[in-house]
Each structure stands twice: as C-alpha cells, then as structure tokens.
Amino acid sequence: MTNESAAKGADMKSAGPLAGLRVLDVATMLAGPYGATLLGDLGADVIKVESHYGDESRHLGPRRGTERSPFLSLNRNKRDIVVDLQQEKAQEVFARVVKTADILIINIREPAMTKLGLNYEQVKAIKPDIIWVGVTAFGPDGPYAGRPGIDFLAQGYAGLLTLNGDPEGPPVRIGLPAIDVMTSMLVCTSALAALRVRDETGEGQRIEISLLDALMHAQASSIGSYLTADFVTPRTGNRSLYFAPSGIYPTKDGKSVVITTPAEKFFGKLCRALDTGWDKEERFINIDARLANEDELDAVIAARTSQLNRDELVEMLIEADVLTAPINEVEEVVKDPQILHNNMIVTTKHPTLGDVDVTGVPIRFYNTPGSVRMAPPLQGQDTESLLVEVGYSAEEVAQLREENLVATFDDIQQAKEERRKRKAAAQKQKS
Image (cartoon, rainbow, N blue to C red):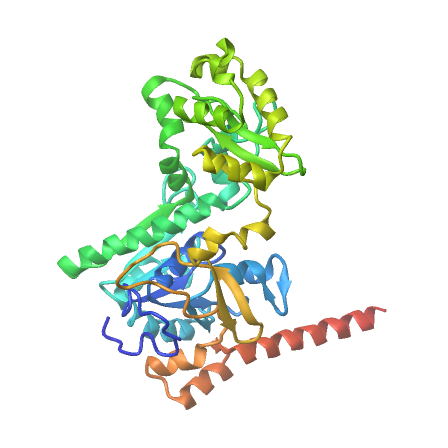
C-alpha cells in the first residue's frame, strides 16, 4: 500500500504483522465486520464504511450510553467514515478511499450492491489489484443465491440443529453465533492468502465466502461420517457418542462441572480421584460396558460429585489429571485467571464511554504481536480526517457535508435530534 497515512490517528500500541495494509469494512452485523476486526487486531488500518443509518448492530441489543453492546463488542481497531453511497456523487468520494485500499469486505446483497457501486468489477475498475471479499448466507450463485440469511438459518440447512440438544428433545440452536464467527475467520484467512498471491503476481481477486460453506467445513466429522460410512450422527446432549462417562455433573453448592474420559486411563484416574472402584465393576469395566450402562454410570458419578463443592471438586480432579472444567457463569468467565493471563479481556478508551472492555486478540505473535489499539468508533468519527487523507481540502469536506454526501459524528447526532423533535411534535399534534 502506497498511502503513507494509512495508520494516522491510531493509538499504535503495537504495529502488528499487517501494519501498512488498509482494509475497507463495507459489511454489517457480524461475519464480515468481525473478519475485518481480526485483520485490524493484527495491525491493518481498518476503515468502517457506514451509511447515515449505520451498521445494523448499532441498533440492536443492550445500550451503554448512546452506544449498543453488539457494535461495541465487534468493531474495535477501526476508524469510521459515513458516506451516502446511494448518491452518485458520494460514490465518487468513496472511489478516492478505495484507491488507497488493499482489501474490501462486503456482505450487501444484490441488486443493492451494484446500485451502490460495490460489486467486484466496479471496485476493480477503481483499484485493479483490490482483494474483494464477499460474504453471503448461502453463496453468490446457485438455487439459494440472493436469499437473506443469518447464522440460525445456516444451522438449519447444514443440519447442525439436528445434532444439538437432548436425544429425546427438539433441536436446539447453538447459543452463540458460532457460524458467523467461523465465517469471519475464513474472511481473514482468505484475504491473507490472496495477499500472498498478489505479492507474487501483482493481481488482486474476488473471493466469496458463505455461512453455509463455513458450517459444512466445520462439520467434517459429522457430515463426513455419513459420506464415508453411511452413519447418521445422533443427538447426544451432553454425552459423547463414543465414550463414557462424559457429561455435566452437579455439585454440593448447586453448581456443575464437566467431566469427560476420552480414553480408558482417564476413567481410572477419575475413579482414583473420587475414591471409588467403578473401573473394577463388570458393568463399567471398559468403554463398551460403560456406554451400555451409561444411565447407571451417570447416576453414581452424580451422587459422588454432589458430595463436594464445585471448586473443591475441580481442584481435586485436576490434581488427578482428570479432564474437567467448571461450568462458569459469564461473571466468572471474565475473571478466569487463564483468560486474563491470555489477555483475552482488554480495556480500551472509548471517546464518549470511557473505559470499555472487549475481548482480546486470539492469535499470539511473539515478534510482531497484534493488539487492541483503538476503541470501537463512533459513527462518522473519522469522516473528516479520512477525507483529508485522500486529498480533500477542509473546504471541500465542508461542502460534502453540506450536500449530505458524507457525515461526521456531530452530523449524525444533529440529524437524530432533529428526528426526535419532529417525532415529538407529531405526537403532540395527535394528542
């Protein structure tokens, strides 16, 4: 990237391995934006491009001040520009920004994408070596192309819902947006692979990633069992299909622990730790016997674990080299000593909210570490400075604002206040 000002305005705690690259995040919600976030964590200069309405995640979930938790949680390490791409003159403004970019990430559906001037060919005409990453629910073509979709729908189409939940109960969705997160990782991975190709050939390219494909990739074991052995994986709840015991067990203080034994040696260690002789009993003598008598096995284990408090039990089992874990509540997760040691909770300074804690960088580079350098941006926070970077004068920026082609944070707030006043006036007239 030739634009030397790519990282201006950033609080550079660590340059990171991707320092010098510029990424345009023209996506909303989770999969696309979070992929851009990971690139930002690794040092890239990420510019979030928003409409006057803004990313959908700015309008959902719990509030903190004027901001929403989903946006705050997913969009660190970005600068922010508001451009109304529905106006042709604004597309010309955006083109200047595109010329400085290396990667563009988008999840806008057609025909809106083309109307906004954002399809691959349109962007390539502006920046021939751009790496363009499109994120869809089901793929850019084929029988489902163009359909709206989210994580939950992908879980249905790819059969994940049939695998999750109790055997006798209904299907249950995965509680966190795991498919969105997996897709975001593929966004990051594919962009980096394309950069290597561009380094060799000088050429960028179009990349397409879908939630459906990401989930199919993740289900190599379960779908693979059917493809290779005509075996349909059943729902097992908290139990394992292949060994026992494996499950969640109660403790004296009303909490629970995970205990699992993926090899014979671990069952023996569990028995020694709990001071029992279960591994000598015929009904539990080996994995096959334990699977055949799993209800009985779980009952005796639950009776024994219920005699101990959770933390006492976990400490005892870890000392015996048993595979175990506490079932932490969220309040406990954010205080977990290993999570804190791994710097997976990081404090960053937000321009209006003060200290905001976000999750940390999951990839540890020892020579060129990534970092959380910037708080999630306010909408339009960097519009003026970014436009100046790409060659606009202060007077020209003012004119663009006047024409409502772009907007700063103050412009967005003023527009919101005017809408609030109009709404209040209309309600007053009705009453």
